[in-house]
Image 1 (tube, rainbow, N blue to C red):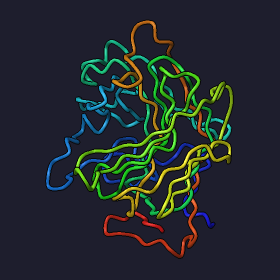
Image 2: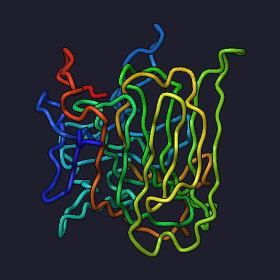
Image 3: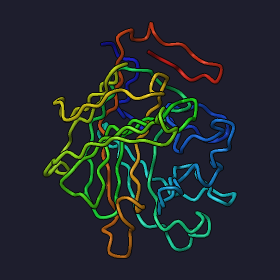
Image 4: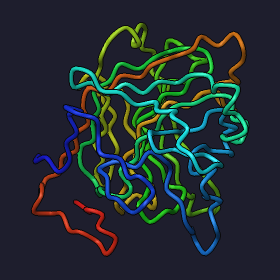
Length: 280
């Protein structure tokens, strides 16, 4: 396979700033219309997922929240070619500016710059395991439909010795949301860096931990179009449990690199009308 996307975090990644400036990563969720219906993404909900009862707000160095001034709530830092995403409590004086979301954290999305259909997707990271946290490495379609979804890694805080992988799709039989997940016992995964990968093929999706196969599922309907990457660390939610005054914070997710490969490599990439690089 040949490289189509690489991020080594040798310096602070270029972030889209909301004023039209391009960036390799966007520090927020995508938004728009899906199947003719507004998906609920405006400025506030580009920064958290209300359906998951998220308690954090995803911030960055240019984030202004509900006001007109930058809030200086930057969760990102780079040291020694390693990106740190920090989750912490929102300073009380800034709660109103972040719609009373009690915690801050970070999210990186490639939806404004890169997406790919099929291939191998991998991240090297040190992922925390702690009450109410949900670090994740996952993918969504660039056409803003949902489902489908491919979850390469999730580390829910209520299962401290397990990692999860999952796919979500629309069942052609019932037209309802369907999902299939795998819970992998992985003691002490939070103690060091590991690689988390997925090989996505037209007929199957194969999950890897440190380049070893840990799960496999048939490729589902709707998973035949470009998906973009996301890296984030949610704090508090419906699945992993609510954060509270006893939640140990700050917590940090460390990312060494992210890479994507395809059989065709750059020869199989085209740029769409928005400037997003679409590869196969």
